[in-house]
Image (cartoon, rainbow, N blue to C red):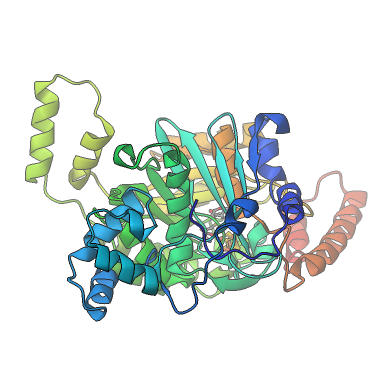
Length: 485
Ligand code: SAH
Ligand code: SF4
């Protein structure tokens, strides 16, 4: 395997510690005994790959435009960019020696000045059910770890990618937020997660027969992607580029907690699917759950979501591509469309945003919350995804009961919304993307302060419970108020 320069200090002990502390949510959710998982510590593979890369440029994270410019600066024709991109991203080849359609002199030159490498994999976990997880080391120390999860479902393979190490936004239900923010990921570290995931299916296949396996990407791993804007957009450009991953814009989703000005900027730069982590239907509650709401309140967030949808308004039904596919389907009397046909029909499909709503027992899951949500969304073209809360150590919330979630879903469906619930095993792991390696990394000692808050919170709750069997909604609010970190 080709990997980033390896920290020779990485030991199997690191990887084991990491597996124990970072993986429980997913291992638990897969319901797989540990023995049924293929676990690997890649650090030894990587250790044999140590090369001196100082003064060399990593080509992995460069967009086509950047790579063309780079080739020109080293005195080469810019069409070489597309050739090299295909080798790297489509065929998983990162050794210039193996890029057989490049002249020997160019291969030799590239080996001297450049390299192509994803971040170092320090742990991988392949479950029998097809779920795959990787932990990448992107710096020194236990805090410099990010995690990527691949979930197979309904014929798709969806990769949940991280954009930052930690997160500065500190949502009260999110484990990543509890570890604080360390740094932004570089483009090569973001796209490298996709490269490694595809590579894991290619390794044993001859180069000529290789295909990319990941079908969908969600920017729902660690971090707030809109606060690492340029590297995230560059990576998504590579995902959409036909010379790299060639994914449909509908299959690349950016999830945001609601950085309003950057939602507009995103619409200026690239057309991908948007998911908004809403989690509350009113400002008072959202200020507590998603503190960035204090800066960008719901009225502004909803307006930005509407602008984003409006930008990508559907092309006319008369689009040639659309007509051609429709005719083909009619000709074949097909009752269902293939994924490719589905993609081609995309121009005629109404654009929407996905609303993510984590279900927190007794906090945001009551009937009046569902009604408020309906009023808030109003005419915004949206699909709602209810995410059962994924507990983590010291979390001050519990997952809503199945009945409560179903009732919430029913209210939204009755109002005409497409509302799904992430209930399956794979989806549970998807939700776990918000947790990742938070337990390992805590540079700002937020977790410690957090634990103290929990003790205070529990004390107040006990006091309430002494007075009444069940805290009233006002008392619950009081409890919540004590939870801020
Ligand atoms: N920062 C971005 C993307 C990463 S979080 C965002 O907030 O959208 C990805 C998703 O996981 C978000 O919808 C987030 O709210 C959700 N999430 C975080 N912690 C969770 C938990 N403990 N249980 C369920 N979903 C969680
Ligand atoms: Fe950051 Fe998203 Fe977690 Fe909030 S939910 S702390 S924005 S990663």
